[in-house]
Image (tube, rainbow, N blue to C red):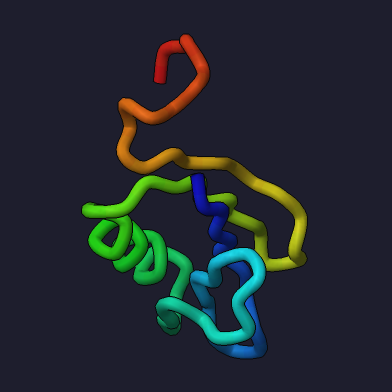
Length: 74
């Protein structure tokens, strides 16, 4: 499973695959990058780690949802 990160880079938010130097997607707001990530990941399997503006970890989302290894609600 590929790992991706959503982080703030200057005045933009970016989605970047671990190990890649270039961003897969960029947006001006966090909400926009999360929406773009949902579309981008629609035909991929991977884990997306969403970070806060200060770089600290906020949450993780697995695409597709059925690939989530956790057996928990939500």
